[in-house]
Length: 132
Image (cartoon, rainbow, N blue to C red; front, top):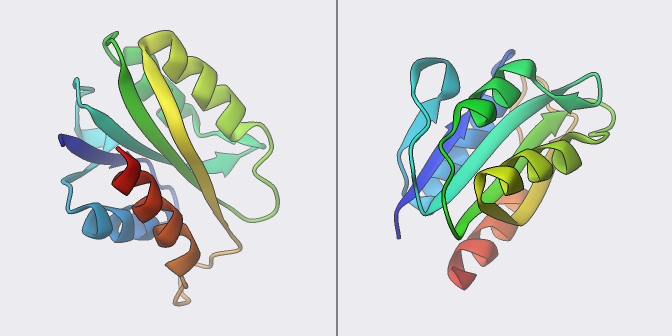
């Protein structure tokens, strides 16, 4: 399966989670600020939550993605308080590009200077990957 992890991170929290997911999925990882959208079978996309929405950089990346047919996506986000409408917005934008979201998962309360436990998120991602 052609899988790719792409993420945007402002403080490093989303990057740390993205790396853990990439290791679990055995997939290449790319920061959206230094890569171009491509046509992949399974897109794993991560964003921090800013103002209860995805980061504007993440939305711009999705907006620049080419349209595809019958592709899958896994979404993840990191947030301090509440994820708001982050997934709803991204799912809608990705659906317009031809992606079906098969999992949306978040990690709350991470601190850049503290170790984080990703086991719950990674377990959900692993289950979703096994179904694809």
